Image 1: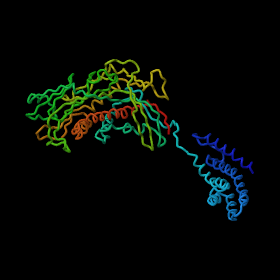
Image 2: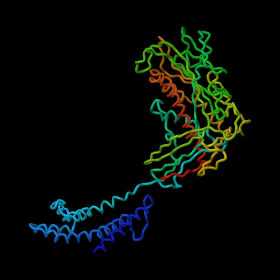
Image 3: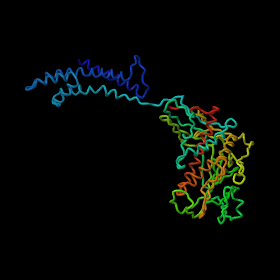
Image 4: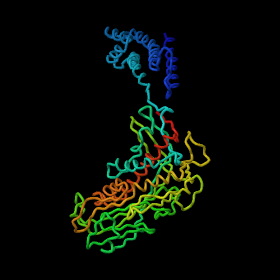
Length: 507
C-alpha cells in the first residue's frame, strides 16, 4: 500500500522537470498530438491517485479506531467510510468533526485533491512573444545621388502635406508616421517592432535674428516705387523699408505683412560658426510684422480692432542633412515611428565655414524670379555623414551602413525646390483707424505654404492674442517641412532604385 503511495514522488518530479524544461520556450511537438496540457493533466492525476491511496486506506482504518471510546454514533461510521471514498464525503466529515480527530487531516487532503486538476492547468500561461522574422521590413535612405535620385520630384507634394495634414494650428508638430508611404513598411502581421535603425534625412534649426534687422521709415510719395504691387499706397501712413545686411530687404505699409526667402550663397546670421553649415541644404529667413493690439478680447481679426503700434521680427531657419535614428512599432496595424535622435557628424574633415549648398537665385519681391542658377562645378562634391554613435571604422551593424552619402547636384535640386515652395510675400491691408481690407494677397510660386504661414502661424487669432505662442508654432510648421521632405522626397526614389536596406523586425 505504501509502495503505491511512494510513486507520487517520481511522478511529481517528472512534472517539475518538464515544466522547467519548456518554461519560456516554444511549445513541444510530441507524437500522437500530445500537448503540454494533456501531459500535465495525466501526470498530476497519477500523482494525486498515488498520494491518495495510502490516505484513503488510513481513513478507512481510523473508522475502527474511532469506536474505541464510548457513546459514538453509528452515523459517524458512515461518514468516515464516505470520506475514504471521495472529496464530498471528506468535506462533510470535516464539517462534522471540526478538526477534533486525526481523521480530519486525511479528509482535508482528499478534499483539496479535487482542486489540483484546475490549478495545475492554470499553471501554464501561453504568453505571446515576438519572434524575429525577415519578412517584415522597413526601408532607409543611405546614398543620394543625381540623376539616379531626383528628389525634387516629390518636394511639391511634401510641402503641401506639411501644412495640409495639420489640424492643431501648428501647436504640435506632425508625427513621423503621418508622412510614411503605405509601401515603405511591410509587416506581415498586425504587430511588428523594429530595432532602432538609421536613415539619411533632413533636420532643421531655428534662431531669432531680429537684432540684425534694419527698419527705415519713409514717407509717401517717395516710397511708392519701393512698395510691392501687392499693396496700394495709403496717404498719411508711413512706409517701412525692412532689410538685413547683404541686400535682403522689402518694403511694406500694412501692419500685417510677411516676407520669406532663402539666403543666397554662404550668407547666414545665426549659424555662422555652426558645423551644420557644412551640411546645409537651404537657410530660410522669415521677416514679419508684429501688430500690437490694444483690445485682445475680440474673437476675430476685424477692422475695428485697436492697433497701438508695430514691431518687426526676423527668424532664420536652417535645413541641413542629418542621420536620424528611428524607432518603428506597429501595434494592431497602426504604425508609430519616432525620431529618437539625430546627428550630423562628418566622415572626414569638411570645408570650414562654407555651406554645402550655396544658392544663387533671382529676386522674388521686385522681379518675381524664382529661378536659381545651377553650379555644375560643384556637382561632383559629396557630403558623408557617420551613423549615430558609430566610428567610421566600425563595420555595418545588421546590414545597416555606417556612412551616409549625398552628392551636391541631388541636394542642390532639392534646395531649389524647397526655396521655390517656401518663398513668398503675403499681406493684408491693416492700418490703424482705416477701413481695412481683410483679403490676403500673396505673391508666391506656390501660395499654399505662405498662406498657411500667414493665416495659421503669424497672424492667427491665437498668435495675435498670445504672442509668446508664435515661436512654437513657427518651429512646428518648419519641423513639419523637414519631416515631410525626409519621408516624401527622399525615400520614394530610393525605393524605385533599390537603394535601400531592408531591416528585419520582431513580429
